[in-house]
Image (cartoon, rainbow over all chains, first blue to last red; front, side):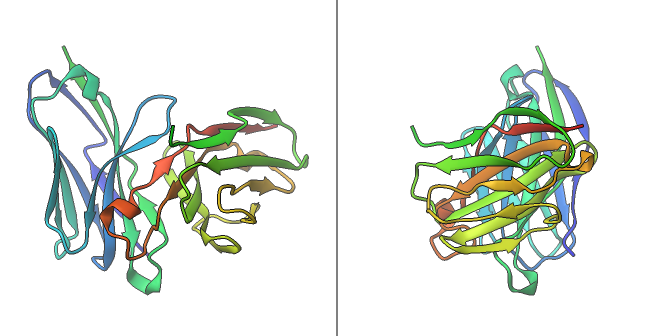
Length: 115
Length: 119
């Protein structure tokens, strides 16, 4: 059974810092991995999706990497801003067992960027 | 505007009273899915649908039913709600999740959530 772990559970940084959020998964036979952002009381917004054949994806100040063999993904946020404060979730589309349609989420990292 | 719409957004009900949470998307997406989010447990998948009339169980399907009679709608049915179904529910859709449509087709769009309380 796929398990997804995110470390740290919470992170507080001053504005302007570069930071890294971590995601690890137990079954490396994944189809893809997505990073989401969730603001309080809101739904999830997809930030980046990395297919299993890719090593990284970039969007603006965000860069996500994927190392399937070690079961790890990182989300790098450059020059953090108070507006980046949110919970960041990673989710793995499991391929093991033949289903590409199921999604397993980590519990998230609560990021606070202080002005 | 491309979106996933859930209704109701908030609902308080009593044990055993059947309810339906509706989900509708206007993007012609093939894939739709339901999740529940609970403190300490994170988001867990309830059911998903790969296309019209094709549905399958996620990790926590017990106590829920779904149907996909039209491409745009994917309602979540609680036939006899119990207090352990008190949760925040999210519906999501994508063009072709898990298929061969490339990374863009796999991106999930989420609804704003439905907070359900069962007394």
